[in-house]
Length: 179
Image (cartoon, rainbow, N blue to C red; front, side):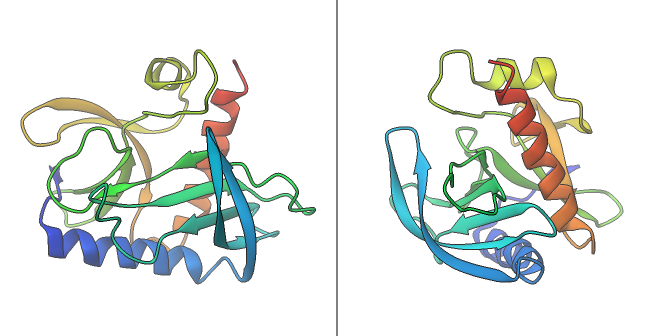
């Protein structure tokens, strides 16, 4: 397993990740998305059949040197658009403060992974809660010079990626509900 660090390659992988998901999340709405300390008006893509929504910034967030993508669980009334988790990718290199990363396996598959650093604005929600309760697939790998634990979100080129991401989002929601 090798983490992807090259800026151009990450840009391409983020585009593939989003395009794969957006092709399955057919409904577009404009709504306020809430997070600890505020919210933003965003374009959201969602699907009632899949049960998930996502919001993202169109370009690299140069201020934070990342690609921002937020996820939540679909609610028919759209009244609670609270972010369950973010899968943010470093624009280049390794940024351990961000949850998302891409790993390339020895067989050439690209995995979308998450470091487990979740937030939520409540005492007790964080990386320890995540790793003490996560029931999904995980791996141990080097992300640059350090070995770390990573939750496998899904395989980038899988036709089922949207369901893999939805399962990850639902698992994070379940973990957060424990507090």
